[in-house]
Length: 406
Image (cartoon, rainbow, N blue to C red):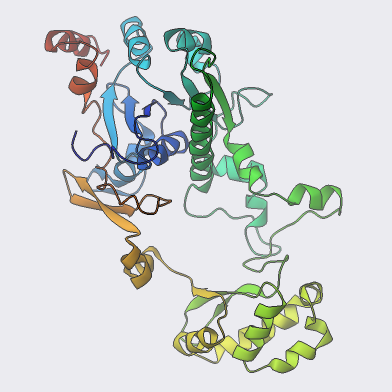
């Protein structure tokens, strides 16, 4: 369907069947679609994916669904029914990757265990993205983004000192796991392509969303076991480099300022007119600055509070200091740099004409850009096209619809 599959990109020719729900695993497939893979989204005939009900929903139209499942063709199939299972095994033979996120053992209970899947397609790559992995005492626990964030140690770091842990107002744990999923799919495809066809026997990828979040926290385990430190909440202040905090200008604008390393700290001192701090023993190196964070942040906070953000920006720019206003999504879409780079695209959409969404990341220089993919499909929107390619005619599809199979 025009506008539905990007067609170009480094993953062109790869076919992915996405039977996952909500966000984490489907995001893996979407990222691969951004890179040119053909992605088919499989839902139950009655729909019901919770993502269709998650905010934002505008006048009954699910914007989260439309953006998160962009570029995918949509089919419906109830694999729990014998006819649906048989049709699924015919279907999967034509795909390179299957993406699923059911609780551990669910597909096995439907007669779609890994042995059966690989019997139908010996070269199939199966991504199984769950909250806690396919093994271990928590394998069958339910999980959502905030569960992954909390258990991984991530949420323990967020919030004010002495205050409660805090989650951000977005399912970060889902999209982080989705990134790892796309990486895993690409890695498995690279392995398959590098293997003699007669020797490759498919792959089963066990991806734990909680472990994906924990993987982001590289030095914390060593900091604890070797240094005896359990890193905790410090608000917006970093305790690994200084200065690094969020400050407020006189006109109420919040911005972040980072002074990692001696040369940048020197530039900050020149920008605020306090070169005397360079000879202050409290701030002579990063370790000293970390020991005197309160004093250093107070100096910077007072300087910021006496100037508008425009005044601050001019002084910081003059000395090439790393800083940024804390952008809202409105600021980001209006920013001239982001606009010039085309960081947002309009996804073609039947209801709205176009739905803004982030452009594919990364870019492959010199290859041009593909047309924006269409928004996420309606349930079963491409049944005729996808099942027709298997040889099913209108009468057969009608009978399957009547039986609640598609």
